Length: 72
Image 1 (cartoon, one colour):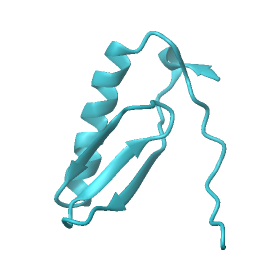
Image 2: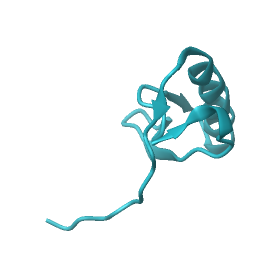
Image 3: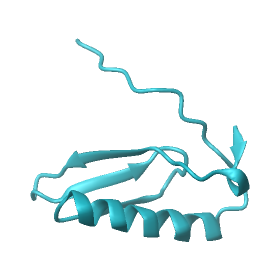
Image 4: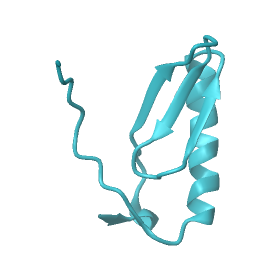
């Protein structure tokens, strides 16, 4: 795990919700998520959400390892 104080890059998983909005979840910051009408908006809102989450968090971050597509 890494401390958030030195991090500048975060990993966001963006998916489309049932209502057509894009949903963003920041991997390294559990509970840090937002939504937007389009990609530009969701990225902008994700940056804002990260700033808010970093101000509230005083703990270590989850380290992002990678993405896998698993076929079942």
